[in-house]
Image 1 (cartoon, rainbow, N blue to C red):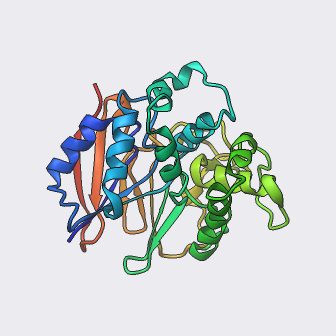
Image 2 (cartoon, rainbow, N blue to C red; image 1 turned 30 degrees about the vertical axis):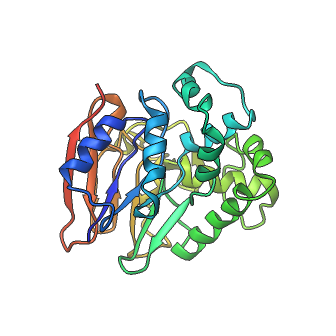
Length: 272
């Protein structure tokens, strides 16, 4: 029995199937952790979504920002714009309601106590412990899985509030949590979001710090597994695994085995 984590798929169904062959994935015995962003940009979002859903309990996938945008589009919470044209086929699918119902019940954060490993799409706040991250994620999950989920999908857009406070309430609070877990890359030294910074962290200067580079982070020695940041690329350290290696941009799709003493990396060529 093996546990593999795989980076952002973004509709790259064919590389995903090649990677599963490369790791000899057995859904009866093995488990996949996916970092989210199952859909958009790549050519086969619908097929990817259906296949991941079909894997049942052998797969854990957290929600990414593109997955949330698909949910918003499905509820007509936002208009369909040109950069999301790749989702048209998915939105027109006869089983879209079933896929939406499944997708909105995926978590924003997942934790394995046995491996002391946390799975998120983008990251977690330097002041949040693992338990606080899971509690914050659960706040959003409760609304997404409830009767007011369509309202949340209309309210989640925007970069404010840009600074965490326990006093945030309502949709402002939920928006911050969503941004933190699904969109964040860099923060300012005083812990404000810097959403404009999308490049490599070593180009950020003194005013932009990668969320994981704050020395007093609250999650301690827990290993964080995440995707979202293709310019960061592959990182495999004892406490940090970055897995978005730009599959949709023609680079690689990456899997890392997490349940062995030494993490093993597998890669296949990305989307043409």
